[in-house]
Image (cartoon, rainbow, N blue to C red; front, side, top):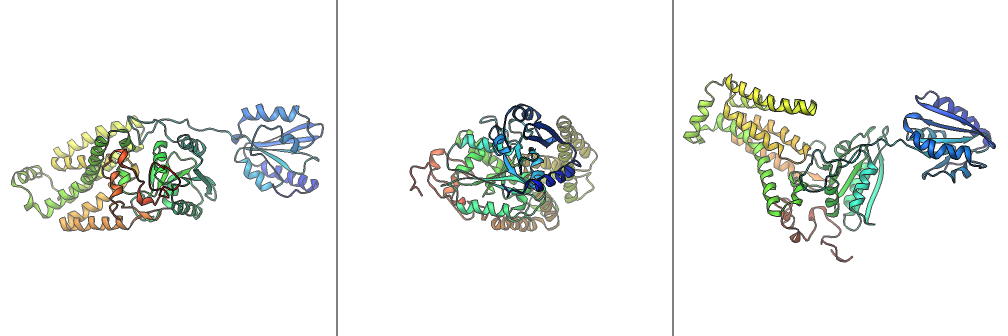
Length: 487
């Protein structure tokens, strides 16, 4: 509460405030005659819940006997009320769903009451990380609802939530969530400090935070994992990691993370460990296949056709007899067509997008082969590569795979297998140097941690995973926690 001014100055400031607010669309100022004086009630119509206003505020203004706003405040059934005489604070609070009360010639200050209009989406099933088994709840755009979904699963006093405000214009709420006694304090402070250092005028989604606090903003690889599943957040917080919840975003960020986590579906933990491990390996093989199969096809046909077995070479030559383009141009045209279909399907309404993807792929592919624009073998290769990229559980990593395939294609077409090997080595060096909140991104491969491989390429049974990942430097390594001295 600010220092109180004299009643005369407050009245002058109130007249000035009314003059400024009358220019705002939807501003309403009511006058009520009370035995102690005239009461003004003002708010912005678009941000206040009219039902709460009529049910809880107006009856108390009209029916209760009080001498000033301080006494009235005791009868208002709302927390976070404030008494202030600062006009700038009043204008700021009005846009956040507050109403003000002012008594002429009685109270030297205003009473601010939060009556925001809560219009938010109900908790629904995950749309991107959907699983057949397991919980069916997903985050929504309201930060309080999302934090409640986490608290419901982690109802412990050690759950730590530190709220920040980011964006000079939007002033978006951001919460850094961790578990005291498990999460490394350095990881928590790194996340908090980077968010505090963000200089940006707007934050409309967690993706803005993800990009601005990344260790390497010029890398195509996402360095924080985003998820829409509260159960996944709970599991990773217990491992000692940090979650970043952003208001107005249904996706929560997780870090420090590793490359392998982007190819692990949380549904793996709901299945038998052997089944889950097999699916995880299939996913990893599919990703490597998606990245390398088209460049290998181009490199071999352009520069190293002598290594192709004779029986297969006959098939490839026959499939390309009417194709007028070299393999590199043929592959680029087909890959570009696949990307066009993906973008068209993503931007159109759901039902129309599905139709475009299926019909467009069949019609264009068949027509291209019959017209001699591409070979049927390459059509199969590109189609399988596209399917392989779809197996990536995290959408943003799937986009990265789609992106790096094009430079690999060009290098393979120009320099052959040697160029392709150098390009892959460059990507590996980049991944080895990459970090997530200061921790190695390529762990547990580098630095090598045998213990962490129990939940990396494969997932071993739960009773063998008796230690948290070393990569995040947890304060308590052993699990489950048996006493305060576990290290």
